[in-house]
Image (cartoon, rainbow, N blue to C red; front, side, top):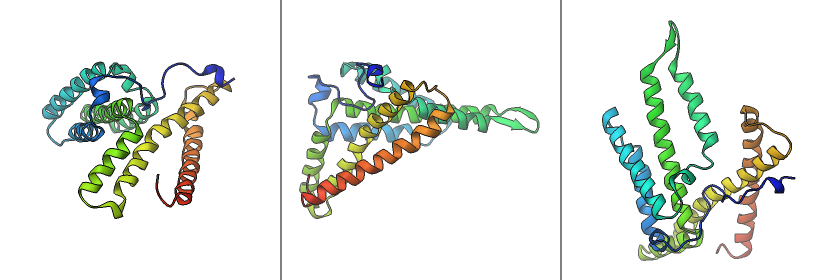
Length: 220
């Protein structure tokens, strides 16, 4: 029954085949640019500067998403639980008990933080939509060789870490489909039940990956 609920929409943070300029750009260049974009979203400053920077980042991501043939809406697919969690934090920060009321400053800060998180999420989603894990691994390996740091195997570690991000969303989508097939609702209990299960599955996948690498002598 879970299979019948599966849609044609790609999983969050999954690769989308294409021949756009973004798809053809070097993986290292895309990784560096989108990493800088994510870091810029958390650049410290007053409220006016933060809003200005976030507006510029949002515009850049929207334009890049259209250039990649994806569209901005697809970049935030899968961010629902994250947004819900941030909204809960904002509510806790905004409520004042003595006297009863709302702290508007706390709500504004939480809103800006939520936009920062969404911008970083969208940047990562865009990266994996136009770049395969294999391309990232090769790019990191070339950098590692240029710096003569092959023995540290930093490229392998980073590419493994990056590769697990889209796999987590794939696991989460499968768990969500199973939850819906059993009549589950979109509420807090879904997160309480599914998050530990998704984490457990990711730990099992990590152990399987480690075992496979051991059998291959630590190489991909």
